[in-house]
Length: 79
Image (cartoon, rainbow, N blue to C red):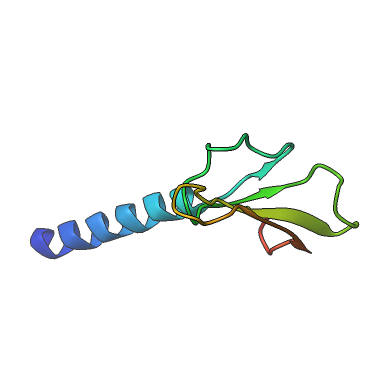
């Protein structure tokens, strides 16, 4: 019985840790250039988008020819 509980407990702990790591905060200002990794997404509520929307910023890399994308999107669930 004890052997069956250990893998289950490990799995549940891993799921809980992944959920906490996946949580995303809303920033008050846009991160400086070069701070975000390519493809990393952050949400910013700096008042530049219409009410009920946030600024979605996707990191880029000038050397790789990928520009930083900035767009206003509806506030995602859970943020």
